[in-house]
Length: 400
Image 1 (cartoon, rainbow, N blue to C red):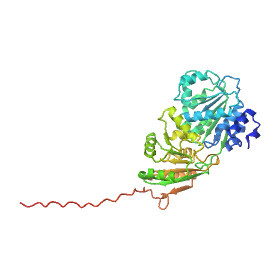
Image 2 (image 1 turned 45 degrees about the horizontal axis):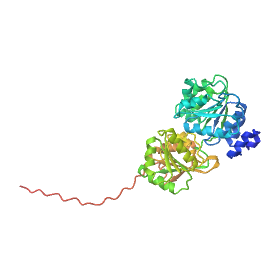
Image 3 (image 1 turned 30 degrees about the vertical axis):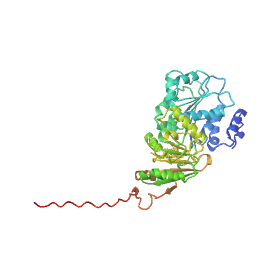
Image 4 (image 1 turned 90 degrees about the vertical axis):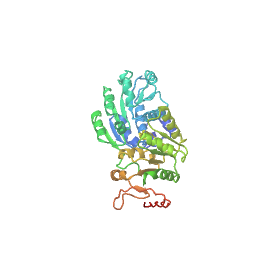
């Protein structure tokens, strides 16, 4: 279905045309009627499937630009996603009088307070900074028509459940609530039950680990061989851009310094960097100035990198949901993508569960540890041959 078939205002159609949006994505087509009609919605959709536009297009039409008040509230898990969400809304609302704004930690709160005192219609926020502003008495939700929880599973995973419940309780009147998530664990179901009014449920995700356009590769090798295997793999692939995920900050730092001489146009990012540094790296990666980005999972929480052709799991993901979020950085909007994951002997049981639950068809580079007897013996690195050195003859002690 095309956007021109929706009878949208000319100013929105003009913005969408400039953005190159002609055909609606499945999530946009499925959710538009419910969002436009004011119904609560609980939707499962992959990151990068067009959820932001799915919300923004119908809601922009319902916001009153003459009313100097926050009318749409959007909660997201990270600062990076906060900025990305606002930038998308700014583009869609470019030819309207609506004012979107984003508040998040790591930025001068005094500047944010000053801006909020002027006209803001759509507020995008991380829960922590939003609660700070609520306690300071800066915000009023008296005119909020719609609250959106984006990447809800990630919001809850980083411990924002109580914060979200508190924020929603501050909207004292009836309002529309939209919840978007890539997975649906029990705590998300409970949140939807407690905070939503007869929501419509829409799911565009199967039990697969991601789109069928993603090929899933695995390598079972000794930890001492991983670095050489990684470089060999990347040099043998036609890589547009690659995201390389590690499970901890110190591993990101270590890997970056280990391979920076072998791979050009590479950088790293994790939550330990300053906001300005992280924002600069994201801009460089989005613009194509960086080819490789080593990151902790802060880069996997909803950020939309359209050029990513390969996702590398340097460390095996902690669970299937994390695997879904990481590999969801590639193979977007019908494009082909590849996910490459290193496996150790300790990961084999979890890998079996991942393949079974997510219905992955694994492609192996090297030995497949799941065949034959199901051995979990880790391959040993080759040992260098030792040069033979004859032992010196023992001195014979003379008898006295």
